Length: 168
Image 1 (cartoon, rainbow, N blue to C red):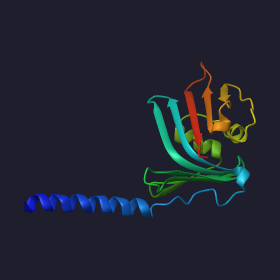
Image 2 (tube, rainbow, N blue to C red; image 1 turned 120 degrees about the horizontal axis):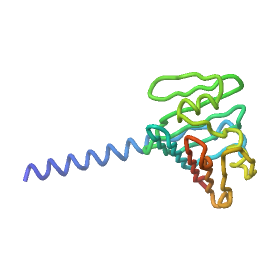
Image 3 (tube, rainbow, N blue to C red; image 1 turned 120 degrees about the vertical axis):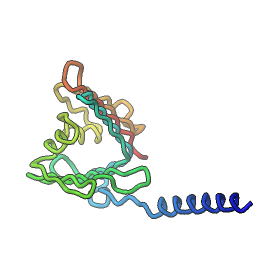
């Protein structure tokens, strides 16, 4: 009987601790720093068919534009997993307790993913502008429903697939 009560108490404490930790976790990202038309949040998934293949998905908040901005990725509990910030001539990545600097957001993205990403066009795509990028196909047909997909064309290596689900 004592064992069952102890197990029940342990389960209750674990559940309470989980709820308290999740309750304390809150998103403090990019969206307070930029005007409404330059703010997005939701879920992002990126697959890079490199050697070895890379896949990443997380909740995010993005603010700004290709010249200056802030992108914050969140863990499943809502804590900050990574913070990317950029301005002309500098981009920083803060994650895992360390900060790394790069000379541009494109250089940071290349180092982090192993692939060149169409950074400037991405901001156009998020605003509904179908900017053409050689080697890339962007599907904006479901943007009104909060969905955006961009794929690096067949024959371009590495193959890259970007999916964004915007929060409404």
